[in-house]
Image (cartoon, rainbow, N blue to C red; front, top):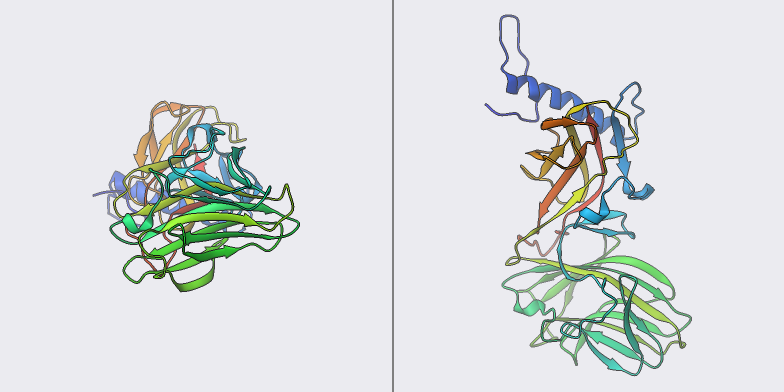
Length: 332
């Protein structure tokens, strides 16, 4: 048999096999992790911890993780990146600028700055066009607007006709999900994972469905910043990772096994999407969320790794792109 998340109940005279014993250990340890996630105080449990990303991301090995951290929902997001704005050069193969204002890239952001109205549209040679996808899609991005006047607008556009995703209202920041129903020609919009626009008609935007950012009528120096535009759709394959640091604030001479449970604000962790290493990632062993994983090589620097594939089954009436807001773990 195999190790599962469940409690086997041998009676007198039974001889449970190793998988049944591992399942029981996993069940008991996972419930300990659940207690911590739910806010209970767990005492005398060496090598146990629960990390919420609201308290920061120092527990995560960010340089070696490929998933994106959204500060607005304090979660790591797993989606295909259109542009992460990390090279400080505007990709003119993706973004087309119009207007007299400034369009630059700085500090991991696409920056629209007032010096006259300015627009940026994903209509370049390699631009994003949701109409080209075979089915539904979901787009995510973080924005920060800093304005003393005027308006900042994010929309679906074909370059001339625009349907608003969000209109700015002063200085603010947020995380947007835009879920597009291709056959119905509608979109749902979530801000900070709360639904703010339901079943908005985008059929007037013919030919192309580009992303468009605009800041207008504001004071010189006012800005709209866009961070990490990513998306999910049926024909995009791949995955992204989230890796914990070895230095987890707990001293352990030798580690042989570990168990973890992710807190998902959207999505689930599937089979074989978790791995454990006891020696700083030198020898990962694949396993499952909420199941004890034995390291192939013992060590003193335990790490957990989540590898989540891009979502390809897009429900037009729900959030789809997976996000992890924290995780509990135990090793020993």
